[in-house]
Image (cartoon, rainbow, N blue to C red; front, side):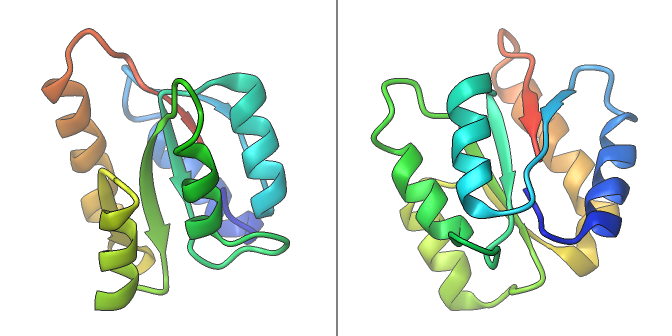
Amino acid sequence: MDDNPTFLAAVRQSLTLLPEAQVVGEAHDGQQALDEAAALQPDLVLLDIAMPRMGGLEVAQAMQSWPRSPRILFLSMHDNASYRLAARELGAVGFVGKADFVIKLLPLIEALVADQPAIQPKALK
């Protein structure tokens, strides 16, 4: 989920390099992200910290109350210690700065798949 269409397209293109990942949806603001994730039930959701209508931390917090909440991975330009701590406290499986996404995102998702081989993540960006 990201409000920047150019960055969203770059992430989508990168995810095509992972045969075990399937992108099932996209959202451009936090409320849409919450609605899409509720409808599509992905295994993994990529969230930005700052999005219109509802921030990524708020979205992650709302998802925690679901009977089957997806794993959350933050992908944000707001990469600092306080946001990383907040993400960790919300149970996020990772936090990747947008500046580092090219080298860090795919290995992190591959590690998540390897950690739980029975799960083939469907990512909602």
